[in-house]
Every structure is written in structure tokens, then in C-alpha cells.
Amino acid sequence: MKRFQLAAVLAGLLISSGMGCEQDSGDLPAVSVMPKTNIAPGAASPAQSPMSGSSDGSSPAPPPASATPQKRELTVKTDTLGSTVRLLDAESEEVLDTVPLTQGELSAVFEVTHVKPVIVEVYGYGITQRSEPRTVRADGELELNLGLLAAGEFRELIKSATCLVKMPDGGFGSGFLYGDRQTIVTAAHCVAAKNVADLTYTFFPDEDREVTFSGARLFFYDRKQDVALLRLPEPVPDDHFWLWSTEPAKVDSEVLVMGNPGRNGEYDPMYARTCKIAEVRPDEVRLDVEIYPGYSGGPVVLEGTSAVLGVVSYKIIRSSSYKEIGYSFARSGDIAADAYTQWSSLNSDLRDRAITRVEDRYTREFGRDLAHNTAGAYYGDSAVYTVICMSLLEDYMRYMVGKVASFPNASLSQRRILMRKFHKEYLADVAPEIAERVRERVSPKLRAGQFEKDYELIQADESVSEDIKKSLEKARTAYLSLKEAAETIVKEDKGEDRNAEEFQDYIIDLWDDARFYSEEVLEATASR
Picture 1: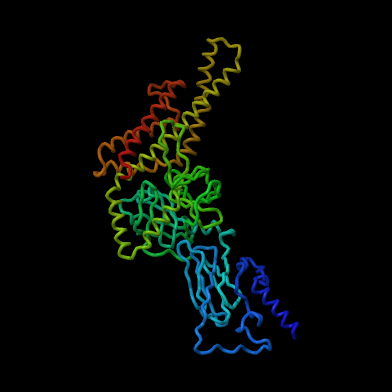
Picture 2 (picture 1 turned 30 degrees about the horizontal axis):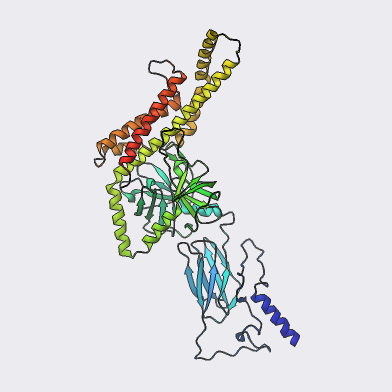
């Protein structure tokens, strides 16, 4: 009998230390108990608790009627935002307590007075995980994961949180659910509508499960930071994931960028691409790949997590050098977190007043904001076309030098004749192929082509000054000339080919005009 009791004591010690838990062999992750836990599954040894029964197997004596049940804290940790944690009676499966996880929460704390075994349940996104029945005798922790982020469903989860943002004029960008299923985060330059309620938000665009929402209200808008937050009238369905900012960005972190790239003013299906954080700056991160405009407003998510490190933006580098064009940047996810936390801490009346205040200011400055965004597009695209033209010129010089070098014994007069011949051959055979690649691969992915309707709205907007309108018109003229030069290899009006030096001077003059007049508009419309 003593040996039986000793064995039971040893078994109880193993169980209480977590060493006796079986590992789940199925597809879903196993339930694991954190170290130093005092939560014992199933029945325990009589050495562990006087409530576990007597050594002869008889039922424990009930506590005195006047005794107050002792409270124990059970902390349940999980890995998926937006999931719900429940505590159930193991025998009857009656729900004792429920904790929905909000914002960045990944743990729930239960005050347990239940003396019988309980079950912990975590559910969300169509998946439920349950613990084994256990009796809670002291404060402890339990980890119970849905396992979605580490599995193949990771991209699908991020996709379910990301939406296509469409503007009334046909423009588009991306956005994502943040903090809950009713808040949309996007880039401020994607909020391009005189009436914010006219913007639409489509999840799973061009798929059978496509669903569109509208009527969102603007409660945070910072054009300088290029971040905006909007509140939908009602939450989206529970099968949509949402994101949160849980940690700062670090150089070389692997991230996933989700959004809606497009070309020729039409969006493509939602697409994800992986890259790394190349640089971390205050309030922004630089990515090590080129991100196309349709991704603007989409999330930059730490690989394998739900942590938003940034909101895809668009960076303009102010420089007189055409070579210093913008990289792909994202604004820090902390900007969205601060805005969401501050607004959600207000009572209902103050929230409504904040929305009214933000939307009134947005409406008053709509024309100026549109001019600012349009000038930025002209500036950035002009820089791209300038680089293309100057690269074409460098390619031309290499071509000419290589051709002439193949005739080392030619006289000076013969070289002049040969150079004219090779010049015509280059324009006839090489340049058209380069121009075609520009038209088909580069131009459709740039921004300024999407701003023609916006340009017309700006010119008709009485709230925009005439000086801004004139400068914007000159910036547009230079941009269109650079675009034509890159797409056609420009010739003079009288039909004669430009030589290399003339072509270079022409391109540099156009770049100077595009940069100067774009910057005039950017300065005049800068955030006050």
C-alpha cells in the first residue's frame, strides 16, 4: 500500500511539472503548459491537494458552507490576434467566462473559483483549440495556440485583412483592418475623394468571395505622415483577420507586403511579396525592393506574425540630381497604433466630435492636398523617365565606342562617316526596342498617369490659388515631355536627329523644369 501511495505521489509530481502531458499527433499544434505551471490535468495525487480525494479512494469531504472559494488566476496565452478565449466546466461544458482579445492582446486572465476540472478553449477564424481537463489549484499559465501564423495559412490570413481602396475618380490603393474588424488603415494619399464616404473597400477583389464596404468615416488624417484611419459603419465578418503593431522594425527583418499593384490605371488581383527592411528611420522604414503605387496603404507585416511594421507610402527625395530618385518607403506602424489608441480611448460623444473635426479640415484642404499629391507624382515619375533617358544615352555611347573600335585603322574622315552610319543604326535598331520596353514595362506602373482626372479637378477648384495651378501645369508639361522622350526617343520638330550632347541637354532641361515647378507646388501646399 505504501508503494502504491509513493507511486501516486511521484505521478502527481510529474503531472504538475508538465512532464506527463501527451503531445498531440494531429495537424493542429499541441497544447503546451508553460514552465513552472501549477495546473494539473485530470485527477491528481492525494499528496497534492486535500480536495483530490482520500488515499482509500473515497470522495473528498465538501468544504464548509460558509467557506469562501479561493480565487486563482489562470493566464492563457495564444498566438492569434482577434481570437476568443473561454473557460468551461469540464463535465457539463458550461461556459464559465469568455474573454475576446482586442487590439494587441495575446493573453487572457481568468479568476478561477471553480473547484472542479475546467477546459480552456481558444477559437477564431474557423479553428478551435481545447486543453485537456485540468483542476486549477494555484495561479498558473497555459499556452494554447491556433497555429495559423506559422502554417501555410499565414498569407491567407494577411490577405483576409487587406482590402482594395477605390476612389470615385477611378484611382485605387490598398488598406487593411487594424485593431478590430471595423477600422481601416491606409495611406493618406489614398483618401482622395471630396466626400470620404464615397471611398469603397473591397476584400478579395475579383474572387468569388469578394465583398465591398463603404460609408467609412475619417477619424485620423495626417498628410505629412501619409497615414489615415477610417471607421466602417459596421464590423466586417468574423472570418476576416486584423492586424496590430506589436514591435518595432529592425534592419534585415523579413517582411510580407500585401496590396493591389496595377498598371494602366487598372488594379491587379491582390498580391503579396516578400522583402527585407533595408533601413529604419524615425517614423519610417525603407524596403529593399521596388513597391509599385497600387501597394500604397497596404501593410508591411513581419513574416510569420501579425505585427504591422509599416504602412506602404511613397517617398520623394528632394534633389537636383536626377539619379537620386525615391526608394520604396513605408510609414511606421506605430503612427497608426498611436492614432487608434488615442481615438478608441474617447467616449462615444468625443469620438463623434473628433470625426467631425477631422473630416471638416480634410474637406477644406481637399484641393490643396490633391495638388500636393499630383505634384509629387509628377516629380517622382519625371525622375524615373530622366534616369531612363540618361541610361539610354550611356548605352548609346557604349554602342558607338564599340562599333568605332572595330575599325582601328580608319582615318578621321572615315570615322565621321562611320559614326553617322552607326548613329542611324542605333536609332533604327536598338532605340525602338528600348522605347517599347519603357512603354510596356515602366510607364504602366508609374503614378502620374492616374492623376489626369485629379489635375482637371484641381484646375477647376476655386480654393486652389492660381499660382499653384500655373506651377502644376508647367510641372505636368515637363513630365509629359520626359515621358515622350523615354517612350519614343525624341527628335527635333524639323525632323533631324539630335546628337548625344543635344539629347542630354534637352533631358536635363526638362528635368530641371519638372523638379522646380513640382517643388513650388509641394512647398505651397505643405502641411501647416
